[in-house]
Image (tube, one colour):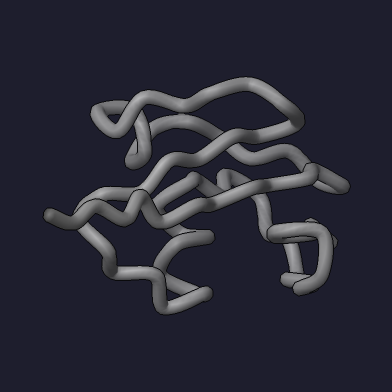
Amino acid sequence: MIIVNNRDKLDWHEDMTVRDVLEKMKYTFSLITVTVNGELVQKIDYDTHIVPDNARVSAFHLAHGG
C-alpha cells in the first residue's frame, strides 16, 4: 500500500513506477512535480523510478498564469 498526497491509498505491486502511480491517480497534467519518500523524482525518470511498498508519494500540479 502506498499513500498519495497524504490522503489517497493505492495498492502497491512489484516494480511499480512513478508513471504507474500517476496513471492510477489519473494525473495527466504536463507540469507536475513528484516526490517519493521526500526525494524529488525528475520527469525523465517517471517511467523507471521504482516506488517501494509503504511509500509516501506527493504529486503536485504546478499552476501558472499571467
